[in-house]
Image 1 (cartoon, helix red, strand yellow):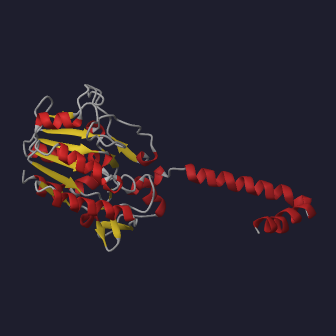
Image 2: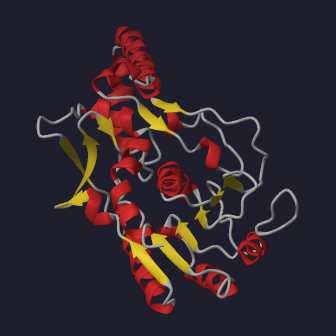
Image 3: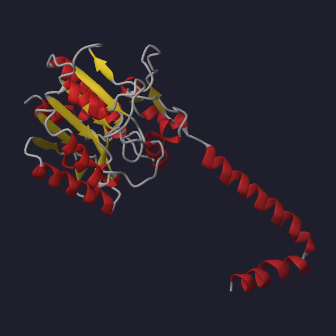
Amino acid sequence: MLSTLSYSYIEQPLRRHHKAARPVFLFGVTLLITIFYLKQKDYSEDLSIYAPTEYKASNYILRFGNTDAEHFKGTSVEPRDNSLKENMPIIHPAQSQPQWLLIGDSHASMWAPVIDEIAMDMNKSIGYICQGGHLPLLDYAFADNTTTIDRIKHWKPELIIISLRWEVIPEHLIIKFMNEIANAYEQVVFIEQPPPLFFSDKSAPIVLANMGVKPSKHGRSYLHRQIRPRYKLGKDMLRKLVKLYPKSELVPMEGLFSRRGKVLVLKDKHVLYLDEDHLSYAGAKFAQAQLKKHLSEY
């Protein structure tokens, strides 16, 4: 059918009207160049209506990745401390025996700066085993050939905080991990994944600017959330884990960011998301009181 339409309305008219062929060709080329330009343009000049969007997790990651990635555009990325050893747990204060331990993927590292502030405020030493795109659990090996399990059994922390992109985590892996460390901690806290936005792995401030989302006079601006069945499966798994392990607790996040099917994306002039499912520093800071309420018990 498409072939017939193309033949009838494009090829045949152009054969009959040779003079029209060149303008049509030039118009097509111009249209393609325009589309390509619009896709490449990052609209950074439009971000002036927002406060700078900050990413402060660089110094809490086992291996620091590429800050030229799409979702970092329009974001101020804190530089990596060159003194940090690659693929080794980070401990504050250095060389101490961590009383707390934060473990997880990029969803853990996004919480790390504000959890670090909470730990300092409570005079707790804390370790970080965070790596984007990986599960630093079970037999994950560090540069000194120790594993996450080895470290936990040696440290025996008072509190283990686990944050992951729960919607993609196989349930049997997290259960196996919890069983492996069963006698090596006093308490575990799981942090729920914030509700995702509707766009893919793109810079949140740039997407918001392109959409014309401006700071509200009421101080809060919302966007429609993405309906992902896997997100609910991740939530259900978390609630199952809390029932399975008596010395565990859940820090809910969905209700803090979500209202009537929409997600809070701007508070005053601060963009709360880095991309569709990671929070900026301002977003993590917005949830800090919620975190502290749960962590301060330990």
